[in-house]
Amino acid sequence: MGGFGWPEILIILVIVVLIFGVGKVADVGPAIGNAIKGFRDAVQEDDKGEKETEEEEPVEEEKA
Image 1 (cartoon, rainbow, N blue to C red):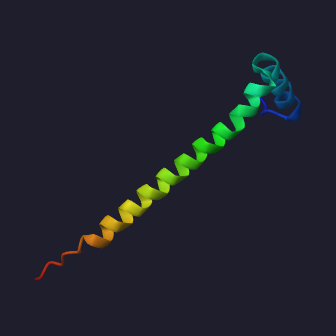
Image 2: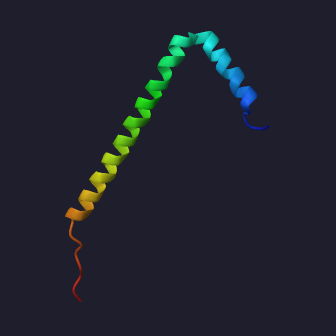
Image 3: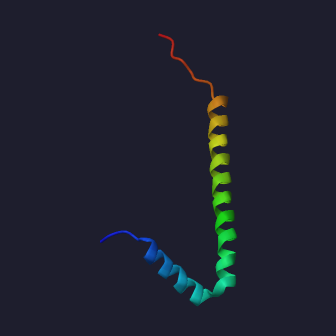
């Protein structure tokens, strides 16, 4: 089975607009954008937290 082409995507978009209406579909774009932005911010904060803990913990060397 092949992937989705432009005709299939266009048909799906037309069906979504018919079901939900133009107003609801227009609200989905900003909501998805905010969700992606929030996810990126959370990942960046997590990466910063890991780097800070690595810098704070000194590496102990064993003396032989």
